[in-house]
Amino acid sequence: MKPIEVVCGVIWKENRIFIARKKPEKSLGGYWEFPGGKVELGENPKHALERELKEEIGMDVLIGDLMGQNVHFYNEITINLIAYKCEFVTATFQLIDHDEYDFVPPSELVKFNIAPADLFILKLI
Image (cartoon, rainbow, N blue to C red):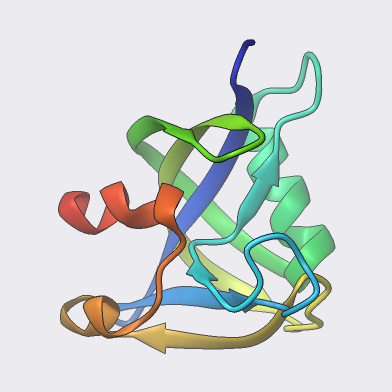
């Protein structure tokens, strides 16, 4: 089965990185992640990231370079996670899929329960 394309943003603001915790009732509830979402059929990954951040957090970012990608196998699905370096612009922080967020110094990311598919990003930062 072909992996599901998923994008995420490593969003920087003043030497800190934005992370958000999934609501308990959501898939991967309680895990912290670099936010993003599924790429729709025929959609450009950067456009998907812009759309998902706007829909889920009310956030605008400047999307920069591709940081990397990783195929991750969950029990029922396989995803190809594509990570982009982003610069924070503005946000309403009206959370849809998350119940908490923070801007964290990179050295403190290891203290959080990061979603399994996102762990490869810690090595890229």
